Image 1 (tube, rainbow, N blue to C red):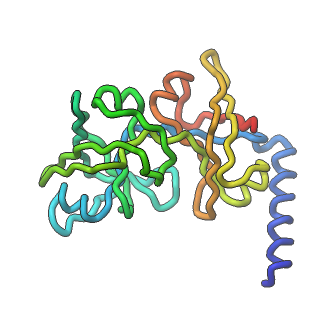
Image 2: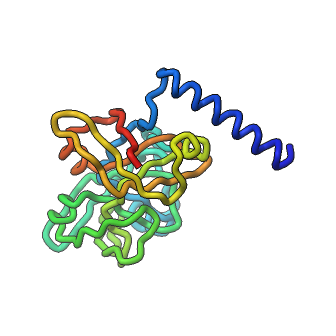
Length: 216
């Protein structure tokens, strides 16, 4: 298939999806939401330092994004003011270790709450992490993850947004409101899903699976 044929196919699929959206069968401009509890992504070196040489993650269940999973392994986060135990490890392993917490967690730990997009560790503080086989101190990587929406290239065409764009998202209900500066993240292997943390979900009285409206 040449480039022209491929573009025509994408346009055809997009038009079919838009037609279905306009029929009322699928909510227009609405995305499902997932609530991210505190968790950690580990690289191989840190996994072995915390859980022992040649240790491999044990999958408990798949999570919203394809290929990602919640592992059986848990760690303890230790800050200057306190610690938080039983923090879930998510797989698969990454190139760099990243700890994702809420602002409430950051204050309880005594860590500066820096909001950053997942994968961007620059300017983020470090933290001490303890596991059953050892303890490590990372110099950076502890963050409050920036709220974001995962979507495929087809989704982005349907919603009329592009990768890296920031949009506003509306939540209905008695404690509803508008989330500002929500980052669009586009990749072929993503599933349509908005990610917020526990603080944000509680403030707006949002439950997993609720449908929120992209306002742009």
